[in-house]
Image 1 (cartoon, one colour):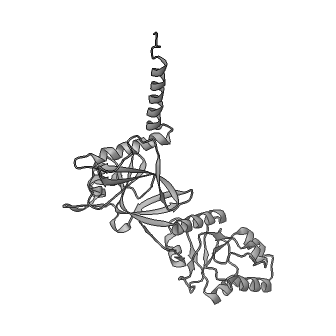
Image 2: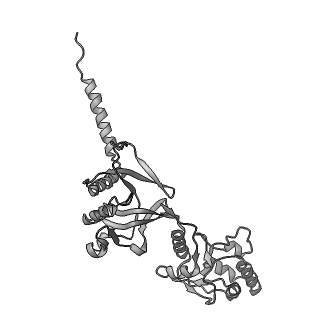
Image 3: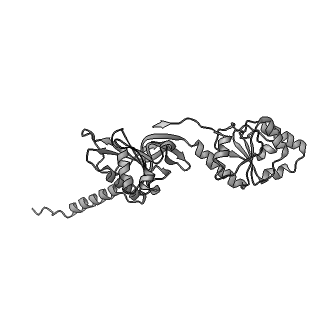
Length: 324
């Protein structure tokens, strides 16, 4: 498992990657687009515009909506020049004017002096903040990667791990042939999302492909159709394959639910011993279905244990008494 370091998002990336869901127009074209956003939160500088900067979140992207612009319209030019000078003297990464409102010219002047990007969007303020926050949370989400496979099996995101040469890719291909969907082969990229969800996806360079030893690289989407792949999936079950070690004790009842830690989130975990000729794809399907049963409140191992105890108890109760 490999972890990635801290990230930042430049205004240039913000403008390009948000274009599909949030229109942003750069007002001051000579601004420094290399300025970096280093925190995921977005701020409305209402108190700062009144002159209170003691708790100002200066590292956040600043959004001005109807409330802020309406307040500023009540102030004279001298006040606006001074308040925007104070605002832009902080290391803010950029400013967004929402709702298609007119940006005060004093703000443009002050921002140009510091090369701070000022952007405009016709989107409502609350919606713009939500979209920007979602985008930045995605960008700054903790992430890591695993050497393995990730598939959507019966709607369950199953990540298959194990040493190289165990046939993980061949198993993934077998599962795709059975009608399940490939998310990632060889390298599974994983991010922790809002709500303690762990989301897996493929490295874009090898997306939709599987490497099979002796066969080479094959394109799953072309061979099996676009229904055989998906871009991302929540990791809900981790299976680790290993060659059977006859000196090792493996779980034979399933009464103990094990988990593994991925970016601070506990994910159900199973260790599957394999031997040549064993149908691993069928076992993985069974593991996914059993996981679904547990989600729906039915634990096969616990139900078997309960019935066994009831049978033993009933047998003791009907034993014939000693008539001697």
